[in-house]
Length: 403
Image 1 (cartoon, helix red, strand yellow):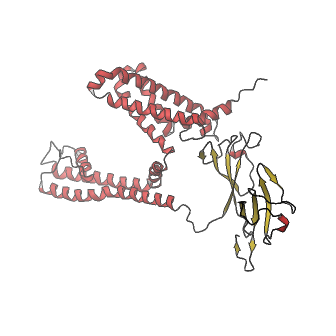
Image 2 (cartoon, helix red, strand yellow):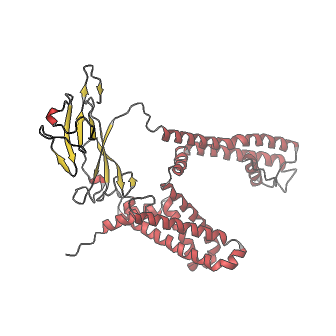
Image 3 (cartoon, one colour):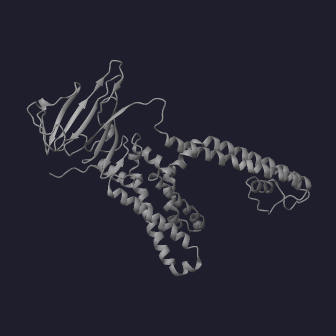
């Protein structure tokens, strides 16, 4: 019987493939590598083609590189449009597509290939369209998915956005005020240089930002005195956003370093299970799995890679799933221990009924080769047996310790 085509499953596979940083399969990793190589080749060709001697010798090669890499960008954009529903699963198909189109990533992806084809329809705007090709370089930021250190930059800018905007507003006010003051002081002495307020803005920008091009400068005594004051203020103005960003980096790295240091901690217990084809969790999203209250899937190991799960991750056969659960409040701690008996171990070649176990220690199971032996009194322990023992101690003063 012919298997019915499952479009949603196919789209999920496409979404994994185009999602940067997904380490679940070799196809996705290969696609990321292909995209990165295409982008680097495209940018290298665009850069090298600005050299007249190289363009004369290899202009055809540069054109071919741009042609095929831009085609890849166009196909990549179409695939991302098709998978927009997977990116915004709580939205309708049309809304998800629109959200992707007008997102920052969607606009960058569109500008990566559209300016290359627009001159075909609008030849007069070829020079203007060429300028928008610079947007391709922003695709490099997608490697953030692989490097936490680069993600810190994004987090710092987001967390300090209000402070940075405030400092920019202060700098803009200072530039406007100083330009009007300098125009008033220098216009009569240099009507051709400070001919309007915009000339003053150019001078104040280069002075406040400590660039000092020297193409416009005051010649009157009052203008020079005011320029000295503004130069001192400029050092402080530049230091404001620099200090904000520096403090943000320190905070972010401190947060990452001390992520586990809290005033209150909750003990978590973890187990690891490996899924097989017969398990009910296979081919299901994590959000669709019924877990007991207080339990969660903490991590997934797939083909040697570690995946931090979210609700949209689909479990696959062979996945090693680490399940965590909160410790029950005021419960007596339990210590689970696995011991492999060596030749000199005191329990080796002894019957279980003859062993002197502590009162709150229980022998759970015995692994002997590929078999699991039920621990009964008449079972004789042997060299190489792996025994699983659980124990607990409850002291009179209610202090709980593991043994």
